[in-house]
Image 1 (cartoon, rainbow, N blue to C red):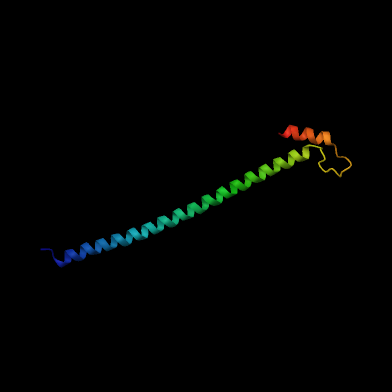
Image 2 (tube, rainbow, N blue to C red; image 1 turned 180 degrees about the vertical axis):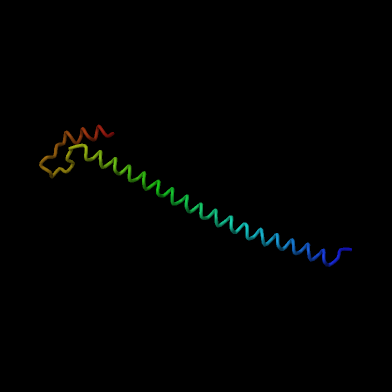
Length: 89
């Protein structure tokens, strides 16, 4: 026959194990959530940096050519514009 002291110790150990497990999982989950947010922020910063670099390359390519694309401009030259389009494709 099991004494009441042994039962108290068993259930106390069981209850403390459940509480510890709940607390430990909660702390691990909060750390994982923080890491997930940091990773998402870093990924977004990386995408923004790539977009800025692509925009800068596009602007440099556009400024390198002296082709005027506005047909109302007196310096407009259709042949240069067509040559630029052929070169870019």
